[in-house]
Image 1 (tube, helix red, strand yellow):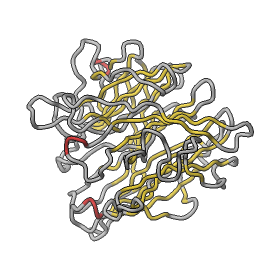
Image 2 (cartoon, one colour):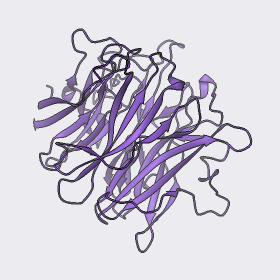
Image 3 (tube, one colour):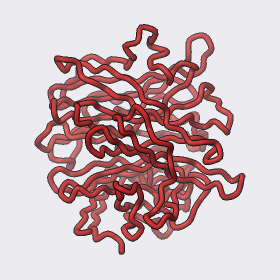
Image 4 (tube, one colour):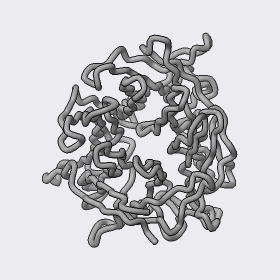
Length: 409
């Protein structure tokens, strides 16, 4: 039977009342800023449209927000930074936050891009900064560059940026290994940003960051690219989630988009295991239930969270009752218990958090949600934008917050 849960829903950021304001907000990348207490940080991404559906011209901004009351109220912290547009190739994506509780240091990473020198194609970089005072101020901004002498600001990581390949990440999953290594995952794209349809994504990569002796900066290396064969998806694998299973063991599931042709090539999540902290990975296999039947999903984001009291692992995403070939529908938003011994979802545990409300646009999605575990209440907190509220052309949405209390099971 479904999980015994209690859900509370409220509006975190209301949609604009003016129909001429074509924008909505993603509330993402939450972290507590100290190993104890109620201080938090997140990023609010403002997505803007001109009232049409030309996504390449849509612009965005990024704003850090802080809370001193466990997320009850939020205030801006620092300036709102332009995010650019895909068409311009000059972009700054959302700040991603991770608290290294062992060091009581707050880490922030974000991706930037610009035209590649010489040919005008994409060049992407991943930058990080460290705060020693709970995010009030930040140390110097550093680009992640592998210590190999052959690496530089353009070709900053062997095997990832060698052939104009570029990365995509704005909601990285982070974990902290037992040896202190910080691991995060992201998507690697093919060399040509005007990619042929059969090469939508190359795959997923996990970076491993290690502190220097005085914990003032990190040295970074990359693991192997996790890929799926073309007969599984002509678009590749992307948007990894990440779960630490103890020691050097890691579990990920990957977004794998299906296709209309050939018939029967449906979207899925594929799971993979690393025994060495993200350096190498097992061959990805389709995520199924314990009875062997497939978990039906669109091509969309998913996330792991572990219950702070029971230790049980739950998986959040758009779980459907039938297979689909592409990225829609992205409702309902649901959760299920993950069996971390058999690497499957427990079928009877699938529980809907939010289905499509009556009268809502059919293409509304409950996706790209921010998420965290409330350290005071133990609740799972998810913050998707109910996009679109009226229509994609209108582009407005309420950013909502679900507080999910697992009562038993």
